Length: 322
Image 1 (cartoon, rainbow, N blue to C red):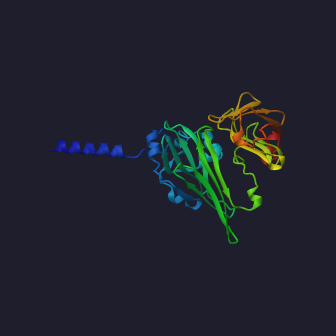
Image 2 (cartoon, one colour; image 1 turned 30 degrees about the vertical axis):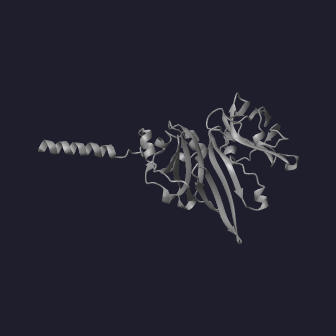
Image 3 (cartoon, rainbow, N blue to C red; image 1 turned 45 degrees about the horizontal axis):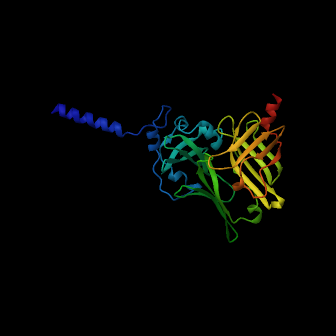
C-alpha cells in the first residue's frame, strides 16, 4: 500500500510539472511553443479602442530578453522607439491564419499603453510589425483599430464636429512581396484641406543613418528616406504630382544598397524596379521596370530631389561642438 501511494504521488507530481506554464518573465531561453502558448486565441473580426487596451491584455508578463529573442531588437526599436526595452510587455492575443501567426502585444511605459502586432511565419521567423494604437493622444479624436478576418488592420480616428461625424480610416495588411505591412485602403470624410493633405506613412520613423532624411522639390514632390531594419537597408516613401496634379505617383518600400551611394527597389511579384543614386545632398531616382501600378500612365519615377536641411536640435548642437 505505501508503495502504491508513493507511485500515485510521483505520477501526480509529474503531471503537475508538465501542466505548469513556462515563465516568460526572466532572461532564460524560452521554447517557441511556450512563447506562443502565452497568447490566447483572438476571434476576428474584432474592434479595439485605445481606451480598452488594458482590459483585453492577458496577465502574462514577457521580459524584453524573451520577446526580443523572437522579434529582433532592431525591428522593435524602429517600431517602438529607442526606449522600448524599458516597456512592460504583456500578451494580448494571437490570430492564426494558415502558416502565419499574428501576435498582438501591449507595451506600457509611463502608464501609457501602445498596442502593436507582429507577424511570425510557420518557422516562427519574424516577418513584420505594425503599431496599431497609442494611448494618451490629445488630438480630440477617438482612436480604434478594427481587425478583419483576413486580417486587415483598419486604424481609425473619429470625432464629432458640430453635428457631423468626421473620420479617417487607414487599412494595412501584410504583403509578402514587400515583406512589410502596406497601406491597402484610405477612407476619410474630413474637410477638403485635410483630404488633400499627403499622408507620409514613414514620417515618424528613425532617421539616424547618413542617407536618411527628406529630399524635396516642393510639398507635393518629395522622397522620405528612413532607417531600415538592418545595415544596407532603407525605408522610403515617394510622392509626386506632375502637370498640376493630373499625373501622380506614390510608392512605399525598402531600398537595398548596392554600395555607399547606389540602391534599388525590387520586390517579388511587382514588375516595378527603381534605381536610387545619392549625390551631394540630393537623390536621383530612375524607373527601370514597369511601375504603372504606382503612377499615372504619362509620368514616371524619374527625377532629382534635394535633401532638406534638418532643424538643429540641442543634441545635434552638442555633437557638432564635440
